[in-house]
Every structure is written in C-alpha cells, then in structure tokens.
Length: 498
Image (cartoon, rainbow, N blue to C red; front, side, top):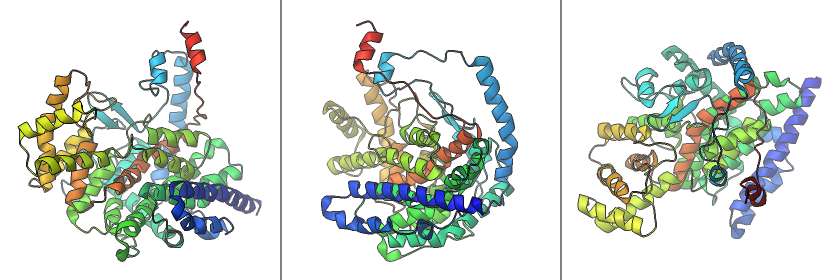
C-alpha cells in the first residue's frame, strides 16, 4: 500500500512539472494571436494527471527477452567500468585548448557513449558495426531489404546482433506496449490539439504530456536503489519508443492531412511500417524507406546536441520523458535537425533558377555563386567526417534501386559530381563531401512526404532508438550528473597569462 501511495504522489508531482513545462513550451512557441489555443493546456493543470496519461504501461513482463539480455550484461559492464577507472582514471585523453572551449567544446573527449562511435574515415559505427554490416546482418522485413529498426534497437541495448526470432519477439512486444497505451495516447492527442505550432514543438510537448506515467519517476519517488533504476528507465524507454510512431503520426495527420482521422497500429506490421501507415502512406517502398531512414538516423555518438541534451538532463536523474523532450528541443534547432530542410530549400532554388535538368557547367556556376554570396552549400561537410558520409551512400543506393529516374535524385547525383570539386578549389574546406542531409529530402519527396517542416520529427523518432538506449546504460553503469567547469573571459585571460 505504501509503495502504491508513493507512486501516486510521485506521479502527480512529476505530472505537474511536466504539464507546466508543456504549457511553457506551447505558449512560448505560439504567436500572441494564438494564445487562446493554449487555454486547454492551462485548464489541464487542474486535471488529474493519471487520467490524462494513464498508469505506467509496462507490466514488468519481458516478452521479448531483451531486458533479460541486458540484465545478464550489466554486472560485467559495471566491473569493466570500475576497472577502467581504477587502472587508468588519471590517464590524459588529450589536451584542451582555449579555442576548443570557445568553439563549442568541439573535439574535446569528455563523455562515455556506448551505443555508437563516429570515425572520421569510416563514419558511424553502431556498437562497432558499420551501416554495410547492419544491412548484411540485421533481419529485414523482405529478402535483401532494409534492416528492421527493432533489430538495431536490440543491438544498441545489448551489443549483440539479434536473431530473426529475437527481432520478431521485440516487434511483438513493442506492438503490445503500443496497444496498451493507445487509448490514453489518443485521448491526449485529441483532447489537446496543438495546431499552429511547429511539428517539433508539438512533439516535445506531447512527450511531456506522457511523462506522468513514467515508471522511472515512480520508482525514484518510491526509493528504489540507484543500482536498480536502469530497469524502470528501460521500461520508460520501450514504452516511449513504442508510442512515438503513434504520437508523431498524429502530428503529421492533424497538421497536414486532418481528413485521415485516427490510425491505429497494425500488429502485423513492424515499427517503421506502422509509422508509415500512421502518416497515411501504404506503399511497400515507403515502408522500406522508413526502415532505412529510422535506422541510419538513430544515433551519431554522444556529442551532438540532441544526444548530449538527452544525456545531460538524464544525468540529473530526470526520467526518460523529460530527458528525451529536452533532446528534441535541441534537435529542433536550425544548426542541428533542420539541415535536411535547408537542403531542400536550396535544391528548389537550384531548380527554380536552372530548371529540372541543369548542366554540369550551370551547376558549377551556381555553386560558386552560392559560396561567393557568403553562404554555404547545405548538405556538404561534417564536423568529424573526412569522406562521403556512409549514410549518404546507403540512401543513394536506395534511390538507384527504387527511383533511379526521379528528377530530384538526378539533381542530387549531379551535385555529388560538382560540389566536392568546387569546395576543394576554395582551399578552405576540410571535408567537401556530402553528409546524410544531402540526400534524405529527395527520397521523402519522391514518396509524397513533401512537408519539409515535418522532417525533423522523423529524425526525432529515429533518434529515440539511440539516445534512450544509451540512457538505459547511463543508469545501469551509474554514471554521475554532468558538471563541466566553465570560465569567464577574465578567467580565460588569466589562464593564458594575458
């Protein structure tokens, strides 16, 4: 009885914080003229939060065996971290210059991140596996098809490539978790429409609306030992991942295709295909594109804004809902998650000026004009990579297989021949090669997902796989709250002897 009371109190307290944050997000993002649209959110502050979000959806069952697979690894990984710290805790990882401190801490090795590692020559590796590896080894929905994201999720959480049987079991478990939460999620989505807000504002706010059901918040409020907090963190992570297609699909329909109405999950479909259906798409090729997109955008080590924001907030023992919402607020920034949208805008400007099929000479002149005007060519270059992004390459292979005659793809292919040579000629660019954002937009456009302002939501749904998997391991390893040292300019001047 005492445990149930503690959970209720923790749920109500955390729910108040979450809904207040949602109101702040909504009212800050909406123009003054739209303020009245936030009134239902203000009224919701007086409503019982358990009625809005429902009780924690997870029953504690481990239908797929994934939690048991993680639990078997936790003791060994804790000992590994303990030994690493004890034997090498004083080892210097590299120098930190004042330029690094001023320049966004770029290049500073300052955190552990298990789920992926970015190599400047090879690109991203997920638990040591390249994208080519994943396409060859992870189970797919169709013969020689794209990997199922459920398989990647198993890999990120365990470090092991799963069998087809394990992936099928995880697919079924995510489906069951989604079905258990559908009633409360639908009620929340339909009761509190956030029309007029950017899709990313809607995503962040809706995640916060789900927070009162956090098993992690309830467990912490009940005094569960920190060594055991990874388990409710895992439950929250899988519950949230399970319903994200439902939440994000509703954002798309209500914002751009309101006539579609509510779309329930199909238990026969995988996570990515269900997401496609919830946006109103039914083509098998679109299902395959979603599987590819959600896999390759899932994780990009820990230093990027969305990953680090999720980790930073989680390090304060905020629950996965609060942490992921913070990460999505970072992803919404134009310097992070809006890059593919900017690529599309630039491609449209190319087509508007030069037509659908410009020549190599015309494109070369256009790129030079872009650079000389003080702008960059969006979709080219990367803070770490020094070669073509493998995520670009696999998208190009997808286009060659499924849409080789698409005008947008042909333009992107011509630019691949032109832009790197121009950027090399400037002598100022370390990496002249295309990144993931240079290609994704034309694929989505081809299959009818043309609302570019929604693309970052797709990115966010995918990124949940990586950041929430790492958050589970942050709690399993007992990683502490982040607290780097900062300097004022006066202190910096003193440090350098000025």
